[in-house]
Figure 1 (cartoon, helix red, strand yellow):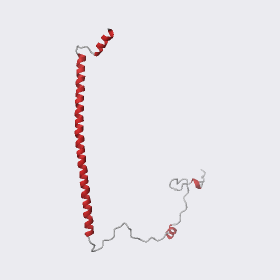
Figure 2 (figure 1 turned 135 degrees about the horizontal axis):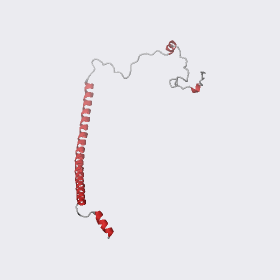
Figure 3 (figure 1 turned 30 degrees about the vertical axis):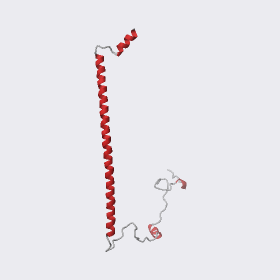
Amino acid sequence: QAEVEIEPEQCSPRPAEAPDRCPEAPRPPVAVVREALPEVKPQAAPWRRAKPVVGRSTAGSAAARAGIEDEMVDIAEGMKGAANTFLKTLKKDNSRLEDMSESQQKSLDSVTAQTEKGKKMLRSNQMSFFCTMILVAIS
């Protein structure tokens, strides 16, 4: 098999996408890289909590806690009011659905009764609609 030479523009900028197409770039030794990097000094992270100061007043935190509790009580009462409103709406909807169900049942009973009445008329000795039409056509 002959080796195919790859043009630089055919190589992907990320060798991980096409490792078989692009030759790897030479890497410097680890010691050279460590010497080239600046020394990193540990710093205090701004998102970490500061160490508590001894003798610090808890009055501020107690007031903040009381404020949060008041807000939570207000939110809970608001949610309770919303839930009661939903309950009333659901009760109204259920009563309307029961009325609709009763109306549908009455209509279904009426249709069933008329169907039975029609079947009885066909079986009886009375003339049916088709017989009447035949007599009209003959005359």
